Image (cartoon, rainbow, N blue to C red; front, side, top):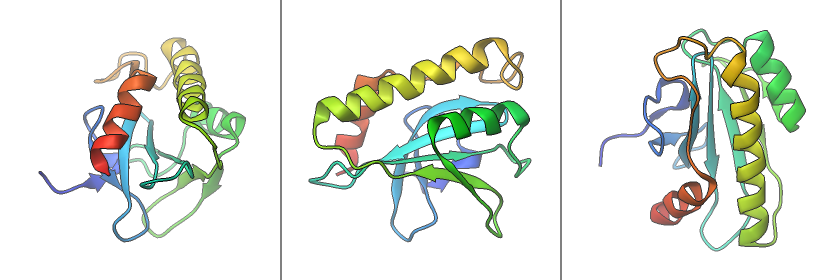
Length: 140
């Protein structure tokens, strides 16, 4: 398997990406010029982490910032650029599926008609929530 890249450098849905913690494995679930989303779910638990990073610009666009804040993610600054994360504690597979479905539906709704996705090299790309869960299970 190829080395994991930073989320901001991801180019494919389902691509394994790294977070800030050593050994953290995330799955890229949505791509848009200016904003990328990934999720991680540790083995045997439902302590999901949602992560968002801007593209190589290292700063979120106004539309990206609004979307991130609406999702309840907190924007952090680091020496490697801004990122945002949320750590909801979920109890069941159904709750994970509902979170993924709501997140991806919101992403498609916001970025289908709003820059920065329009005309980008990967417009409106998201994984289906069930594909997200299957890909997460492969990483365990």
